[in-house]
Structure formats: structure tokens, C-alpha cells
Image (tube, rainbow, N blue to C red; front, side, top):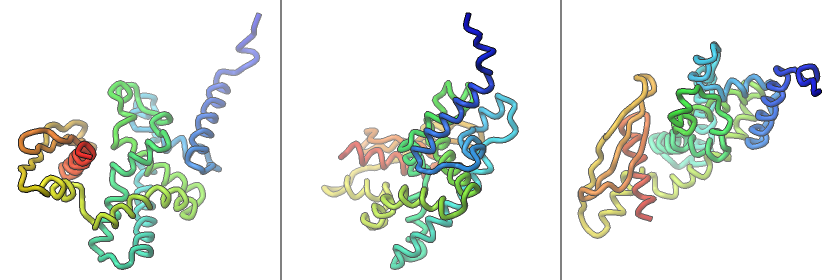
Length: 243
């Protein structure tokens, strides 16, 4: 007879499994936490906390990570692209650290496989939502900062924003809506129209859905935390579809 309960304590197995998951994520992002609880907190969504009676989740540490991200990206832009005006620097930073960009970072490391979300959120594929993915990246940045300071946070942030910053500067600081307009109107005027077709989520975390129509035909669709961001995502999707 296998005396499973006597040989292995179930809480120990869960704890061990948790460590394995954390180690895998640490390997992916290239940083080992001294305080593993910070990483666990960073990947815990409010929906999971509320369903499981937990008081702590990643919202506050995400707030800190957002501030760290802004400081490090601002300093890098200031030192690297000193010829840009203040307004252009602001646009460059927004382009590099927007929701879309951070969601791309999350997907690069497979964050969706590690996020702890509630059952309801999981049923609607919440772990794949750009807003949740972007928030988790900011939370991980905050966790790294608390665990080891700004230099370690910088090692994670800079490799993940440099390409987008270079892309922004190379394209002449043009946003996606401007790029789309220039691509479509190279052979003459066309009618480009953006429409908000849907919105969902609570007021503090609402997501807008936009479509871009070109001469009455849908060419791209996007989501964002505000109407402008949703339209920009739609324009980006349209550019990809054209190419």
C-alpha cells in the first residue's frame, strides 16, 4: 500500500510546485528573486485574490512599477535621443511603454502561463487581455525594484523598450494613425473613419474596441484603455493587414 499522505504533505507539494513555476518565470525574465513572495504578488490579479479571500494582489506594486518604468525610460530617452524636443521625448516614451508594447513584452516571456487570475476572468480569457498582461509587466518591474533596486529593474526594462524607441525615431515620430493615412493616401484621397464599436469592463478598468474603416470597409480592429488608444491599435492592425 502506498502511504501517500504519510510520505508527502499536500501543502508541501503545492509549495514545491509554486517554486517550480516561479523558477521557470525567473529563468525566462533573467532575474532571480531573493524574496519569492514579491514575484507571487506581481503575478496575482485582483480577480484571483477576491475569489480566494486574499487581501494582497498586484495593483499597488503595479503602481510602483509604472513609476519606475517611467523614470528609467525617461532617463534613457534623455541620454540617448538628446536631440529630440521635450514633446517628442514624451511621445517616444508613450510609444515605448504603452499597453500594446507592455503586452508584447508579457507575450515574449509567456506571462499568461503564470498569471494567477480568478475563475470568472479565466473563462473569458482574461489572462490574455492586453490590459492585464501590461499591468503584470509593470507589477514585475515593481517587484524587481523592491527586491534589488533600480539597476536590476533597468536590466529588465531597457532591452524590452530599446527596439520600439529606435522604431519610433526611425519612423520620424509618426503615430500609427498618421502612418496609415500616409500609406493609404499615397495614390490619392481615401475616406478613413474610426468607430468605437464596443466597450466593456468596470469603470476604473474599461476597455474600448475600435474599428477603422477605409472607404466603408473594415481594415483593422483594436482595443485600448481609452478611445484614442483603441483607435491607434486599430490603425496598427490595419497597417499590418496592408503589409
